[in-house]
Amino acid sequence: MKNFVYFDLETQQSADEVGGWDQISRMRMSVGVTYNTARGDYRIYGEEQVHDLVTELQRADLVVGFNNLRFDYEVLHGYTTLDLRQIPTLDMLVELQKTLQHRLSLDAIAAATLGVEKTSEGTQAIRWFKEGRLLEIAEYCCYDVKITRLVHEYGAAHKQLLYENRFGNKLSVPVSW
Image (cartoon, rainbow, N blue to C red):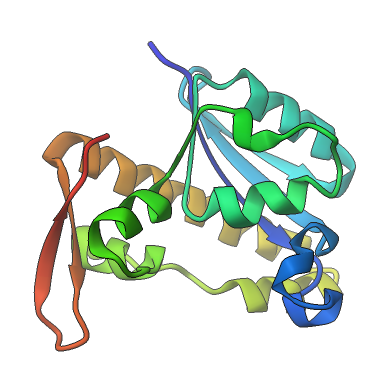
């Protein structure tokens, strides 16, 4: 069995606070979460365990995420000299964007495909961090990882995902993972 690691993280600061989207590596991780198929469990990492998180990602046969190449890995590049983009990675946002020529949110795909929605958003997680509410961030991030895993598994089983276009029509997009 392959070791798939589903992954997401939240940050301490927003793009505005660090000088723009070209400074993602300065945002700092508040909480990172993985689901490891080999172990069958979730792991929650605080900033002080960021190197353990990087090690887990390196040991994966495949890391699966949503916008992890452009965002999550860039946050982690603030902690390591390793080029995390060299890890075998499926970034579902990148793959969907190749087919659709536009971006979809994880929430839009999960709602149309699975009938579930995210519990919050990244900007709320930053507010929680400033308030010291790390448990809420961990719960939110775990749920995002679960949604990521369910969306990936659905796509693997059905070779398509669903989304609603701006007119409210439910459409399908083929996937090949």
